[in-house]
Image 1 (spheres, each protein chain N blue to C red):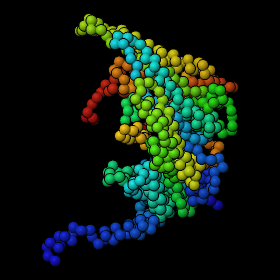
Image 2: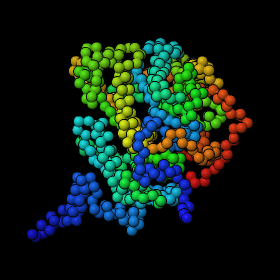
Image 3: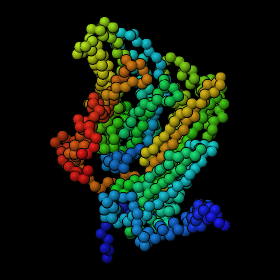
Image 4: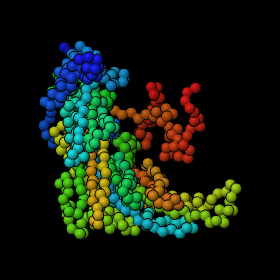
Length: 275
Length: 324
């Protein structure tokens, strides 16, 4: 008879903790940058991590002239900023494809400046390649390639629960030069509260272009929508009147025969009292 | 001897301290622990001395309900000087520290060390650094002591949750790699870059000097090669311990070395460190997950001034000095 009242623990875990090792790992070794919770939720969603996928692109940003009084897109820089990120993402996706991944979750896209040259930027895309545990093939991205998504493990589980699956990360970039105001216009507004219309218009236009490009990418990929869309404003060591608007999000489609909206459970409201 | 001698003697270490220093030195030399450390750990294991843990009461409750008992705080330190390679020095330093914390855990009769933290003093003595691991050795009631305790970087709370899900965090793995991109092809670390006047450094230089926007393909390929090699080494390092790794620490940098009348050389180095896990693939997770909405205000995006979502004003309305 046993008087063991403690919670049960899996046998193989106990064997390992007693100092016994399994020899050989038939399925190979996976690498990932998941947290504990992310790992558990990706498994709960029916997937297994297989490997960290990283792509980078070290890019030399050139120069583009813009007239003092012209509000205009600096198309060469827009293309450059987009191309650099797209290359990093493409290399990451190629790594995932080589591993046989169904997709990549938790993708982070970062821009690093190399300290020895202000014109050189490193674009890095990093995420964890995953495969469906039972070999389900319906989760691939466009053209049978691995899907990409900025969703964390938690978000990924939640998205599948709501009847959607990620397709690919979509983005749009617009580098814009905001015109300087002429001396007469500046004098005319001294001491007055007025709208600086040309600045407003420039921000509108730059943001609109970035959003349009992202939306177009999502539509072309056959997505129903984009989740986690975010718009960043940034300046990468450019003159003060040059600004980049960058839109990024994860395009999603409904899972075939996915969840019926009626059957998605309502989350319960909780109030934790210990923090 | 007189007054001078008495003062002089008093300033030196006592006989007991000298004895301890000798014991430490001897222990390090033969990869063992000094007798007084063994005694302290054995005392904690046998319940003769108080146990010591970094756990919070909530964590203690959880480990006790799973039949786990904290034993002692254990550590491993290695102050390591890097001579021919900074990068490889880091890998070696952590590996030595890992061996030492495992030794202390085994002396404490433990099955695992949880909440292991990687620490470094911010003191530099030349090209050297200390690599320190500190954690709480724990014993599982129903198991015999392990000859080879697992080293888990996760706190007790997550340790239990992982074990329940059939995932054992078993250790720390390090993958480190460096390489030179230069014109001679004489790279350190086994670099295999070709030479010649149109070599990668010449091409890189010409792109860096241009007005055009374009990718630096050679530098990118060089950099990706280093990173892949570091990840491959990480996998090799994982293989004897488990079948997966959660790599949370990624450090990389490219350093430019200017040269006279020649294009610059580039040094790339990458270190990746992670928690090794051992788990059967495709394991079923037993507890169901229930979605909840937490109603605490601190989680509401409206309450995070200065964050990306809400960036117009940086401070809250009440910008006070502190409690009255």
